[in-house]
Figure 1 (cartoon, rainbow, N blue to C red):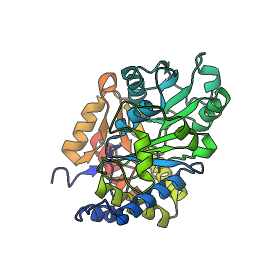
Figure 2: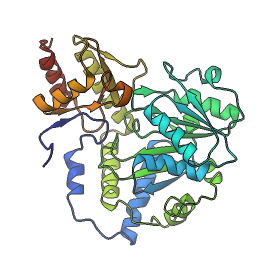
Figure 3: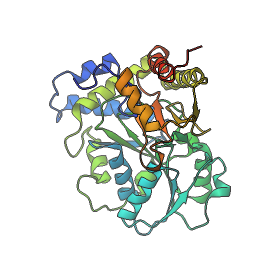
Figure 4: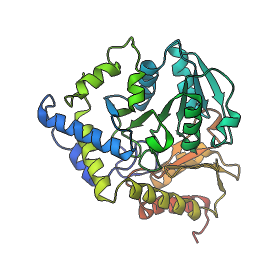
Amino acid sequence: MIYEEYAIFTPGPVKMSDEILQVGAKQTPYFRNSGFSEVTFACEKGLLEMVNAPEGSKVIFLTASGTAGMESAVMNLLDKNDNALVVNGGGFGARFVDICATHGVPHTNFKVANTNLSDIERLAPNGDHTALVVNAHETSIGHLYDLDAMGEYAVKQDLLYIVDAISMMVTDPLDMQQSNIDVVIASSQKGLALPPGLTMVILSPKAQQALKETHSLYFNFTDYLSNGERGQTPYTPAVTIMLQLEARLNQIKHRGGIAQSIADAKEVAVYFRESIQALPLKTFTPYMPNAMTALSPTDGKSAIDIVNELEAQYKVMVCPNGGAERDTVFRVSHMGEVTKAYTDILIDALHQYYGVARP
């Protein structure tokens, strides 16, 4: 199988546990029955508990990528009468800007750099905004924003607070009630450590009340909420990934709960960063999540060359950047079934690549 023998440190897909892989290896069952409805209900309950969603919150299950979750949230919650304040700190923030433009949603392109937006009240542009839209973790550069500070701002300004938490859920703290979040977008192939193909949009009661008429058949949230009452989706769900999600939520619970998963990710992230201090690499941002480390070479080497050499020489896969950051940034994931021992594979490879003995 392609890349089967490679160590994987990419921020999606991520390394999966054997337990979850075994669930995926089984025959996909029929799903229009009470048995699968119970799976859906269990997945919804587990996700709502994981993010401490407000009472009455619901989950939309989409057989689609994370970008579909981003776009569908805009389609169902914003229209020409809104004015979205869209945080744009990188490639995924820019994607939200493009989505708003595509669907004719008035918006402010709030470009930011070198801040985690703990000071959003000072930095935010003036305007009669109705929503705050942000990628909690700007995955293109490994940059984590202050969700609590933005939530306080959203409350003061009476904004609908939409958060893409795709690449920080399970590894970094995410609490809808504490941060006053109205919408959370999540995806299967990041911290949940499942195959790609399943995206979830968690709607608070406030968000449900804010739903608008949408000109879409497949992405109509009202239809999903109606079908969700019986544990079903309007169209064929990612059945096997849903089964894996149920198993993964139980796995997280049995391993000590979400707090323990976050602590484990933080321990691995800190271990990795401390273990490469002797190498000519620097972290790209001071506002790093537990989920990932973005690195820049300090010796003139091209980041893309490092990525390619790690794959070719050591069978280790990390994630390149594109565009203007192609030669300056590469990314290392700490999501999924990653331990210190597994991370040693990458740490050793980096030391060998640079010809530096590991302390």
